[in-house]
Length: 264
Picture 1: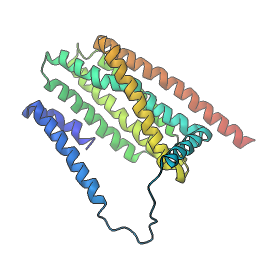
Picture 2: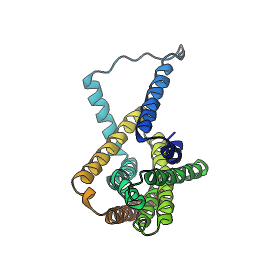
Picture 3: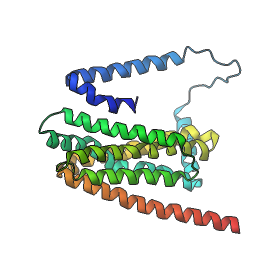
Picture 4: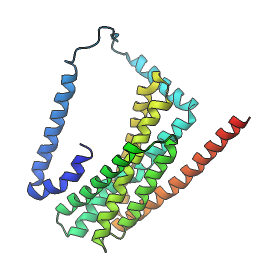
C-alpha cells in the first residue's frame, strides 16, 4: 500500500474532494486494525511458549540490552544512524517543500501536489523492483546510494518552478532512493543483530527515525518553513550530498580495517 497509495492519490484527488481522502485514510486504518485483531484468532502451535507481561523494569533492561548491542556492534549503529539521519531534511521537504512547490506550480490547484506525489510513488515502485533483484552485503553503501539519489532529486526540484516536467522527473528520481534506504536497514537489523536483540534494535531504529523526523518537522515550523521553496530543496540536497560523502568515507575506512584484520 505504501507503493500503491502515492501512485493512485493523483487520480483519486482529481475525482473526489479533500474530505473524502481523509475518510478513505481513516477507513484504511480501521481495516488495518481489523486485520491485526484477526491475527489473534489464528491457532497457535502447541509448542509455543507463553510469555508473561513485562514489567517496567524489564522494559528498561530490554532497552539497555539493545543499546549495549549497538555499542558493541559499531557497524550496525552506523548503518542505523545514516539510514535515519537524512530524515532531518527529508521530512521538512515532504511536509513543507512538496506542498509549497506544488502550490506555486499549480497556482493554487491542489491536484498538482497529488501529481507530484504520484511521480514520487512511481519512483518508489521502480526502486522497490530494483531492490527485489539486488544482491548485496554492503548495507551502508546501498543506504548511502539511496540518499545520494534523493539528493539528486531534491537538487533538480530547485528548477521545478521554471520547468514543470523537470519537477515531475525529479520527484520520481527522489522516490527511487526510498527503497534503497529502507530495505537495507531492515535486512541489516535481521542479519547483523543478535537474534535475542532483533526486536529491541527495531524499536531503537524507530525511536531514532521518530527523533530525526520530529526535529525536522520542528525546524520546518520554526525556521526552514519560512525559506523560499527553491532554497529549501537546495539546502536539503546539499546536506544529503555532504552526508553521503561522510558515509562513503566511513564505509571505506570500515572495509580497510576489515581487510587489515583479515591480513593480520
